[in-house]
Image (cartoon, rainbow, N blue to C red; front, top):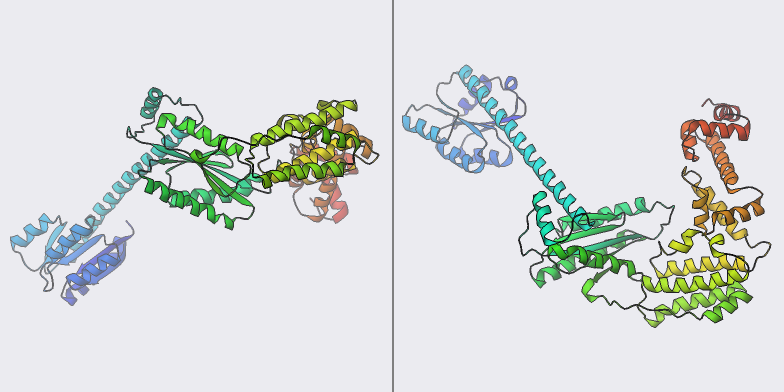
Length: 536
């Protein structure tokens, strides 16, 4: 038994000293022993310290022990008590019993008997503690279980695993032990977190993680939503239950605006919040789908709150000057057509038109038609020049006008190099491929298709032009880069050879050692020792 605190109260100083000296408190496992000489002093001790056991005289001039214990019972009901008195009057004993004391000792005190009683009292306190801990653990487990059940229900509902019909919802609510008032309405809010320095091989998830944690924390702290669902690495869904009146909803919007304003503390990060409409549970998923579509079509706004009911469903339909652009692409130079296209896209902002992802898509389709036609006139088939990643998913990661302009510019330059082949035309592509390989050579899952997709070229087509310009295949160049990196790490670091293997993109240590020996005529251990004099 450890960690108990005891308070001794008696108006007679020598009586307190006697109890302090007469009991083996250390042997009983008492952490702290407090003393007081009247009711007011005792109350002060209670208000500043946790007290497990009270030993109190009954008859004191500034408030009796009975009055003190009555106050303790009203404020600290878990404290046990033992009364000490020089009065054998049954009235005192009866009042003590009514206040649920452990015992009633008459002065002069037999310290041995008091010590036994204190020991028994501490055992009772420990038993109560253990029982409370068990009960608290059980209640916590119940809360965790219920919370997990609710999270599972919401995730399955939003993912469409649980049908949204009213009858099915009643069945699943019962299955997950969840109940809502029949009139309960739900307001979904979708958050899209963006990190501007991302890309296929960038650490987008890692970059966004602190910002996502911040958004979650702020929403939880402001008690805006109890239910938060991670829909994707950069999408959070908040489900708010029934803002009762407009005043509540306006206050909620003000809190969201405050959260959005805090994004200044996260450079290169932004968030858009899409606020749905209040809906009964069976209509909630359809509203969430509308928010997803709204998010997909928003490629202009960042750090903004957009209400679903305020959204204009119309979108800008671009009309490309196809014949003019086609003629300029035929004749070149590429600088002129690049400037024309950049000017055309930039005009969208000055015209104040409603540009959406659909606008991008329509422009992209017409633009590719021009490219494909011109390639065909040169005897080139688009699917044998460009990667499927460009043809099928070219706009997948584009969500701003600036990114769209850069993407179109890149595709145009790439296309013009194929339409107007020059001796050094492929150099820019080759340099991009080399740079990409050098940057991501440590990724053991890096493939020829990944490299080709980075420059939006068909893998076979890229392999041909790469070998023509460099004299080696892409896979041979990748291996060469990895071996050079391995040499550098073996010479300039003390990393274990197995770690060097992983850093250079080889998960199989034996395969790495074989390739390294083929390259240097030495295995990694021999190479390090020969060059540095150090063993592996």
